[in-house]
Structures are given as structure tokens and as C-alpha cells.
Image 1 (spheres, rainbow, N blue to C red):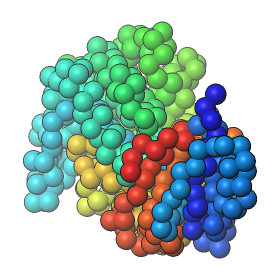
Image 2 (cartoon, helix red, strand yellow):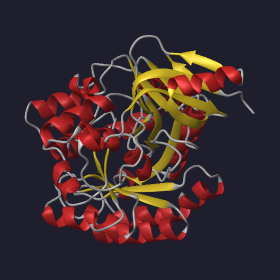
Image 3 (cartoon, rainbow, N blue to C red):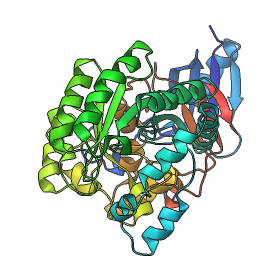
Image 4 (tube, helix red, strand yellow):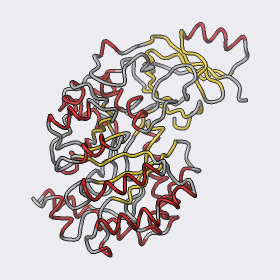
Length: 414
């Protein structure tokens, strides 16, 4: 058992406690503790309260004290519930083509897009993929993201998808942050299947899903339901098989056309991600279900398209998470805080709604109940900003970076 540790004082500590999972949030709902401290034990939070009171206890019990100099605002460690940071190569050429007027689908049909990254990722070794993951996840950690999901999906064969998931597992063992693997083998139909989605999905069900289970490589299955990828009809047997095998589901939904969110609700997915094309019908369907709506503003910025209707989802009573979608094609920026702040500006989200979307609501999209809030028993994952007013964090739209980041009670960046 590790000794108790006190961190503080915080001029403001936002524990994100007492807030609902679903629906709109006013900034007046945010609990803000002043002159607060966190008492930790074994990587978890033992107590949250007045710093002077906790300091007296810490000194009496001869605890380690991590004194914060100057003004400090503390928040739960951020959670990025949707990334594709296991990849090789760059798609700077795609970005230039999009900005010259070519569409995402036109570029893909001409040989760019996802298939370009598939080719480069297949040619990369597992070690090369591991190094890329570690580099990107380390940058994320320095930006306050202590938990992040990582998808496969650029292998598109049983062997290559396993290579990606092995790389994620090996990288995870070298990171302080928690990496959550998701299998996105149902990303697009690989060329060797000549456009036959049904045959490809049958192949994945036979050759890949059992291996994922046997080797415990991931507990989550994702699918891209969209023109040029998979339809509502042909994806159904694959998701049924995955669910029967005990996998949790998530869906790339309603990015360019609707339909994916309907599948997400019908199959009890944890989340429906993207949602830029969602209309009122889709918004109401998701709001009336347990599915978490995950907005990906990085894709909108990368593609130059509309943001997901985040305001409408919240007003309808949905749970809204915000994730970076960090990938080499449509969302190369990979700065979750900047993207969340920009989404808030365009969708008129309160600070409370944005911060909830990258803390406890994002954790719920990953089915993780032990993080995203700062209260007794939760993981001691913490991000600290050098400011006296939490509103400065989103006001600077990502340019105010964390002063320190803590994972399971240990300072992992300062």
C-alpha cells in the first residue's frame, strides 16, 4: 500500500460531482471548491475538502505533501473517447486536395483517403506503430488526457488488425495514461474483397473476432456505417455476432448521411460518434436511448464541414461526449481541448457542458465509472492549470496548456 499524499492548495477545484450524465448544464451548476485539497491513497482519492483541514491531517499522519505554488485550478484528467492514433504515414496531400475543392469521398475513390493509410500501416512494423502510438499518446498526456481510446481499422485483414491491436497493447504497457483498445476492422471494405462487404464481414466474424476474445486484445467493436463503407443492412449480422460474443459496441454514425445512429440505438451501442448529419429525428432517437452522442469537432475542422448539432442533442436530453477523432486523414490536429473549446463557441455550449464532455460524460462512453470526477474512491487522475479562474481554460481555446498532469496520484507531467 502506497502512503497517503496531499495535493494542494487549489484556488479552484472542479470535482465535476453531482452533475447529471444527460442533458444541458448551466455554469452555475458547476461545483467549485475554493482553497481545496485532495488527499490520495493507493492512486485513488481518499478525501476532497478544505486544504487547511486536510493539511493538518496529512502532517499528523506524516503524509507526503505536494504543495502547489501560485494559483492553480484542478480538474479531473481528461478522457478522449475516440481516436485513431495507431497509424503510419501522413495524408497531407488529402488535406491539400480537400482545400482545393475535392470532397472526402472523391479523394477516397481516387485512391487517397483511408486506403492510403491502410497501405502505409500494413507496410509498417509493429514496433513502428508502437512508437507512433507512444509519441501521440505522450503529447495527449501533456495536454491533460489521462485516458484515451485507440482504434484499429487501418489493417483490414485479420493479421494486420491483430498487428495494430498488439501494438496498442504493447504501447499501453509503456504509458502512464490508460489506452483503451477498440477494433474497427469494419472501417471500409479492403480492395482484395472487391467491394463485397458481406463476404468481408463474414470473414471478420470467423477469423478475427474469436482471436480478439481468445487473446483479450479488446472488449469493444466499432463499425463505420456510411456511403463507401458499410450499410445498415450488411453490418447487422456482424454487430449481432460481436454482441453475442460479449463485445461492447460503438458506431461511426451519421457523418455524411444518416442511418448509423439508428443502428447504434437498435444494437445498444455505448456511443454513436460523429453525428454531423443528424437531423431532429436522429437527435430525438438518441436522446430517448442510453446511447451517448459523441461529437468529433476535429473532423469538422479537418474536413471543413458543419459540427455535430451538440446544442440540440443536449437540449433534447442526450448525454454529449466530445472527442478528438485524432487520425491522419480527417482530423490531424489531435488537440482535444482546443477542439472542445471551438465546438463550444460554435454550438453555444456552456463551460460546464464542454468540461463534462471531456471528463465524466466521455468516461461513460467508454463504460468507465472510476474516472471523470474527483471524489472519494475515484482514480486520482488530475489536470492542473496555472490560473486562478477555471473560465480561462476554455477562453484561451486550447492555448492555455496544463501546468501539471497526475495519473493515479503520480505527477506524470510538469
